[in-house]
Image (cartoon, rainbow, N blue to C red; front, top):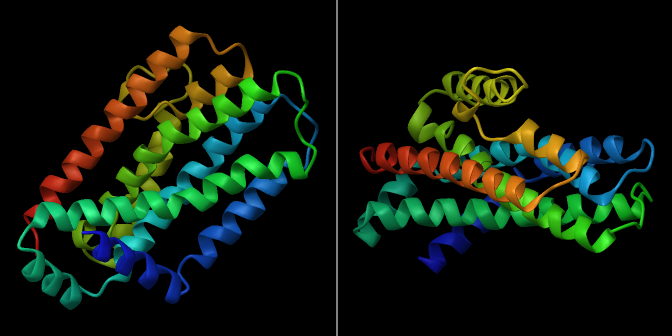
Amino acid sequence: MIPLIKMRLLGYLRSGRFILPLIAALVVLSASYGGGRSSAASAYGTSALLLFPILAWQTKLLLDTEPDGQRRLVLTALGSRSREVTAGLLAAVLAAVPLILIALVLPWIFDAVTTNDAGAGVLLGLWVHAIVTPAAIGIGAWSSRVISGSAGRATAVLTTTLVLAFVIGLRGSPVPWLAPPLVSTARTLDGTATAAAVGGLSVWALAWAAVAVAGYGWLRRSRA
C-alpha cells in the first residue's frame, strides 16, 4: 500500500494540481494574518476555519488525479478495494501536512501573534488543525470524480457541502451536529479553551469525520 500512496502523491505533485491549493492557502492566510496581533490560539482557530475548504478542495484534486483506467489496474493488482480506498485517504492526509505547517508558521513570520501563552497556543493550534483535517478530507472525498460523477456535479457537491458546513455551524442552528464544529471551535479558541470544551469538540469533529469517511469508503468500494 505504501507504493500506491507514493504513486498518488507523486502524480498529484507532477501534474501541478498542488499549485492552486498552495497559492490559495498562502493568500488567504496571509490576508488573515496581515491585520492586528492576537493570541496564538485565536489566530490558529481562524486559520483552521480558513484552511478547511482548501483542504477539502485539495483532497478532491488529489483523488481525481489518477485516471480511471489506472485505478482499475491498481484494484486488480491489490485485490482489495479497502486497501485502495485507504491508500487514497492516507495520501490526502500526507498532502495536507505542508498546508498545515504553513498555517502554523505564517503568524510568527507576520508577527501576528502575541507571545503570551505561546506554548499553549501552539499546542491548541496543532489540536484544532488535527481535528478539522479529517472532516475536510471526508468532504473532499465525497466530491471526488468516482463518487460524484461529472465535473459539474462534483463541484456542486463540494461547494454546497462546504457552504452548509459553515452555515449549519452558526450560533442558533437547530441541528449543529450535522456539520463539523468549525465555527464553534474557532469561537472557543477566541476565548478560554477549557479541557471540557476541547474534549467535547474533539469527539464531535472526529465522530463527524468518521461518519463522512465511512460513507465514502462504502460508496467507493461499490464502484470500480
